[in-house]
Image (cartoon, rainbow, N blue to C red; front, side, top):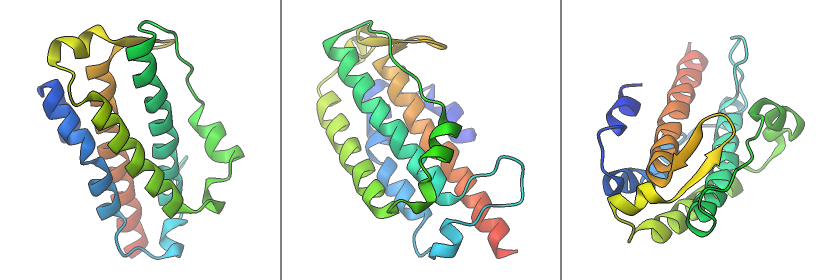
Amino acid sequence: MENIEKLKLLSFKELLHQYSNGYNLLSKSIENLNDDLLIFRPIINDAWTIKEHIIHLVDCEINLFLRVKFSISETGKEILIIDENKWKDKLNYNNENLYNYLDLFRLIRIIITNLLIDINEKKSKEFFVMHPKLGKLELKKQIGIYVGHVFYHIDYIKRNIKIWKK
């Protein structure tokens, strides 16, 4: 949580740099984990497996890809939101190929970073979408949310690893 609070103080360029590093952080968090640990579900109410956390992150990243493009090309457009639990349950994430999803995550991060690299602080606040629950989401806020989203899920990944090792 400490990392997420610090994000509010960063400039758009600093956030974009953090965003571009998200794949490295995520892949490092699951380095050398076996398949049993990837699908281990702690005995905690509403707990997810590590694989579910990662595939959820990728689904959200796909959502961000569209939000960023809408922000620039159709500023102010109302966007859709997903029900993460329905997606996790009905799409059976644990049967998916995790490494295909990690590749997709890496590619989306590269594409979005390259798309936004020349946008300055002022422009990052001019481009936005309308979220049904959160209201106006400027590019800067969108990138900040998704930087924090990786930290948030890495904390759960670490929790699952810790419980597994007990």
